[in-house]
Image (cartoon, rainbow, N blue to C red; front, side, top):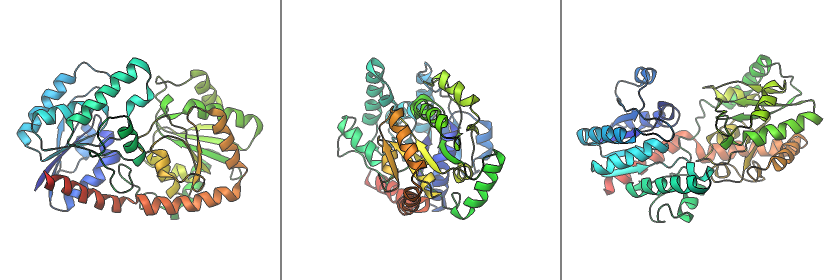
Length: 382
């Protein structure tokens, strides 16, 4: 039996992107599975008893307690003698890659779900790029969750072209057709629209994700402010947790909070219900590992608008399932949103093609089968 340990900074990453796949691997009877992340009592109680949980305190962002986290992980790795350690998210990957190498873990897998340094400039960019390269050097194999980011990493010299791959068509965890159940769309749409007082004839744009600058919310709010000035029937539904200290223009944010045509729902574990209530999905992000919400929106038969960056563009087909605009371009974003409003036939064609594409390329159960094949390949070639 192979011993695998997953390491992330916060338990939310495990819950959202890892737990279902870990359960699938465990069900094969070939894997003993452990988790390392920040201590969280709710997570501890929710994790099935057949998994092992080792809490290690890790502060998000630049932190001074990294050496302690590395030391704790190294001790766990040496004691448990894992065959494979998989890590993702910036701080966890930095600490775990060092500790796993020092502990002599044979397979050190870096799941490169996003590149934080691409959102920075100058010395800060150079510093975080050097950390990214260090994590890649410490890893025996690297798996971005999109082909766009694999190419970007090779072009940036983060690791050589013979080191790294994408499993199947990408994404961290695929899309569950049981959760994103298209047969319930009409029911969900009615419920959510009634809850927020949205008339059926209103055109609603949707955004799902953390509300911060890197997600492009400044451009989204700017475009929406312009659209609402000339169109009384347009709405915006923002689904996610605010992180307004991270690059959000407070003037724009205040306008959005006060605008009756912009709805903030907060964080949810049922994005499929909110996506059902909108007519077009928008992700104007500056950087993404993949952009899971894009394929989730497509699965619920929505046309999409994304920025021209690796990740989101891997999850759609330009001019077939949606539109692509340049990042940080509120004028281009507004034009694309206006085009969607005025093109019902195009929206319908995008929606149908988008669902077909998402289901055939990113269905969760098939992805888990491909991940199983990949993990056994990595373990057996060691």
